Length: 427
Image (cartoon, rainbow, N blue to C red; front, top):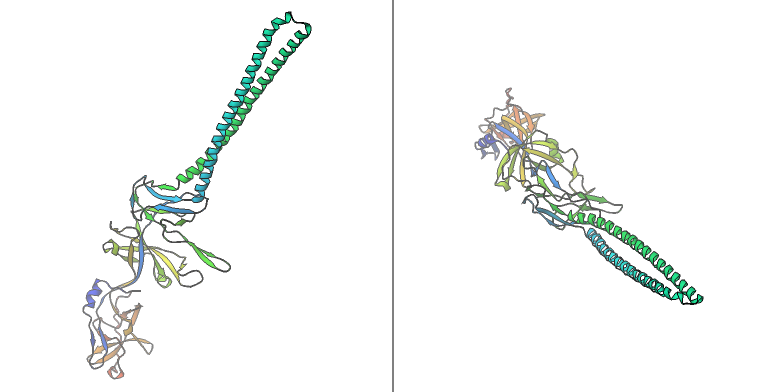
């Protein structure tokens, strides 16, 4: 914790005199009324109050790895490529399905060729059968001169040729119907395969993330997951998302910060957290923005802390606070570090002394005021006490010189100066 003074205090400190008394080696401190400010110094990071997150698609096919990612703080235009992801399992499935589709398409071509060949052979047989029938009909002219046996034989051959033709016609019709059915089934399977392949192809295309707006992008951090087992524990994820990072489901890879409202987020220890309240004023300095300074106010602090060490290894906890910035400089960008002085106490025109100058005597608060070569014990009333200074609310005028260490007995005046009833402004 640091205690900073206002401009008035700084000016007043120029008038402070720390001197060595040659006779006692007691360090003296000259008082002066001034404004008192007690602050808590915390280091935080500029962040946007709201962000448009760029989230990868939900794909349940194994690990998703970042292959290419826009630079942190890069300005992009709508349609620019933000991120390229890789999912090897998805790519393997897609390639397998693509090979299967190619095999099915080749199979359809073979079926079509086999059907054409089968039909052509049947048509040839049908043509041969029709030719035989025509020849038999030509031979029927000879029946007039043939004996009964020969005539009967010719009639049977005619009937046989007709029956053979009808059988070939039935085979041809069945072959055409069967061929169309097999082709229809094969083509139906191809349509299904193309549909499935299209789904996987769409998922592969979705692994290339395109900007849907214009603006500055910032990289994000992957959440840290702690896994505790019966005999051991470990962590998964965590850290800034970059090329080569393996993403957890739902982890955004980038974000578009809302530049209209920038905040400071900071982590504080539990002791400081208890003293910080919503509405307290904050002085903010951003060295990376050319030393730009501004002011803000504590807008929120979390009620749930997180351990600063691995689980079960420490009881020290840290908490997060959020500071709203009053006036934002164009140089103040999200991601820059910011030093925040949170004003926890202020007092105008008051007297404050180093805490080491206040002593306990007979259950009373006492300071030793220099009077010539002696020190007079003065009973005082104290107000707020910080780590280094204590506010005096009564007993001193503010123009005295006091000792910073208890004087030896022979330098202490036996006469105790009573406290002045006139009190300074209280904190």
